[in-house]
Figure 1 (cartoon, rainbow, N blue to C red):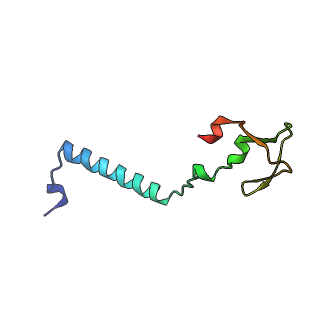
Figure 2: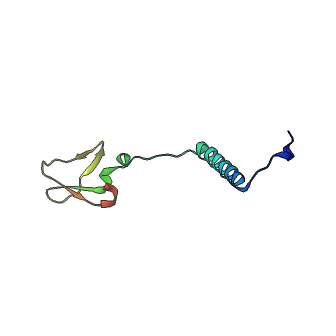
Figure 3: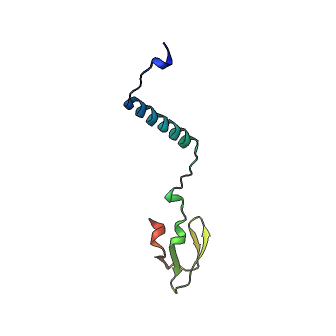
Length: 84
């Protein structure tokens, strides 16, 4: 069997080229790292405006807590895009 005796028609050649392109693309995508950021990981408190009953902004202390001396608090939405 000689290599020169092998006949390849156009459809087989196109199929081989498509498979090679797919193989190269697959190897590239497997080696590329991607970082997925969860929407739940975004800081929701930057989208909220929290004030006391006289309208003064409350100090955010972290972990979802605000520093206040009053029991009456207002929570408003400052940026709707961050809540999506």
